[in-house]
Length: 375
Image (cartoon, rainbow, N blue to C red):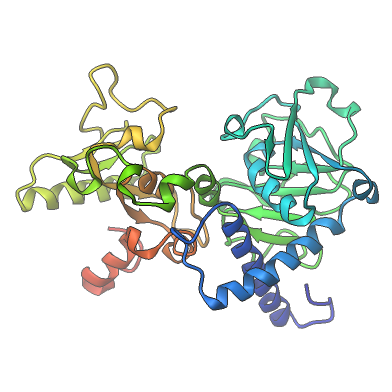
């Protein structure tokens, strides 16, 4: 970061440049290979700068004792487990070869932990169930979630250096509320970039890194996202599937419902009377199977949408940098995503031609340019 004597404008510009470069290397490291994410010469230059930046900021706030032993002990609190993979990949860059031991006092198990073997490359995952004995375990680094989890979970670790991880849109939490700590977080891993301006923390003390939740899913879905080879899919090719558009959502937002209704109406106007389906409880129009009305929550995306050529993928909000698992799910299912959200950020992870940008379509087709506010 620039020095405190820099002007506010220079501070903001320099901070954004460092954050963007760090974010690019982070996304690429999470498994977004060239088959999904085309890297230009400009981006390659920034990837190199980003690696140096991450190494510096990660190691700087850790106790000296960590460098003298082969592991680092990380404690979760207040939903910090949601960011376990983001932190793992960050530490792989910063401290190559170090073992990571996760302690989880609240006995939670976030998405993906059961998919990673005890040894994954240079990082070893050891998850401890500490329960009420958490205070007796020495912790090197704390990974803490947003304020929405303060009511349900305890603040176990207060004295160790900490990293804040945010996997929610900014409307869901108060950035100024967190567990009590003597110092601000040394890093904030954020699935959004909206908090960079007017930050709750001093940008000279806390480094913000864009860590989109979508990038974590590309790690687990890598094989399906990196190739469209026929062997990746079932005997029925995506473009030969019998149904047109699928959508499964349990978070019923009006703008999503409007989008689905508009698609269903448009399909009917061109003679497609069947095949635009809402499989979830929002706008439900077709049962998932004879046994259940909507898809069970533990199904993979390709088991939810095997019959669909297109899948609606709409974020909770059109927030800067906010890209979650929704588009990754659509693409991993072999479909073309119909995407609503920050498409500029999405194009840093996924190829532009792999999805339809709803906001761009609205701007180009609706009277007055659509305004980007919705249908």
